[in-house]
Amino acid sequence: MKSTPIVRTIMVVEDVDFVPAQTDSKMILTQPTLNFNVPFIPTQLSFSIVVSISDFDREESYNVELKLKDTDGADLNSLSWEIKDMSEASEVPTGGIIVAGIKNLPIHKEGKHGIELFIGDEKIGEGFFTVFKIRG
Image 1 (tube, rainbow, N blue to C red):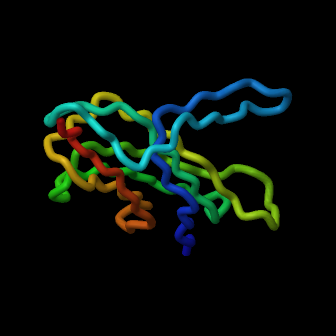
Image 2: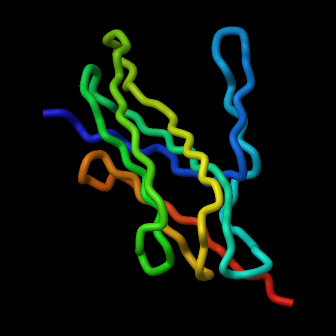
């Protein structure tokens, strides 16, 4: 039976860039964000979500789904990936980083918006970001 991977990080950032390096590209996270302060509601937001997950079983496939929820828990958006580790056996747990670019996400209310991460039907992690309308 395959094990359930472990969520290590769920982070909302303004943007993610990749810069070539000698052996690998390097990821640059721009402005980690807890809150979005907007001039009006409804609005649309563009941002990225960075998720790190470890302890995948080698040679097993995993269906990963990221769901974004509104303040009432209704689905706003979802993205999915299939992940399979094909690396050689090692004592080091397998893992990876998922970057999801979210563009023009409709936001209809102020408040806490959920981020949920699933492997198959099992929720393995969650986070949130908050949207505030600037007053005055």
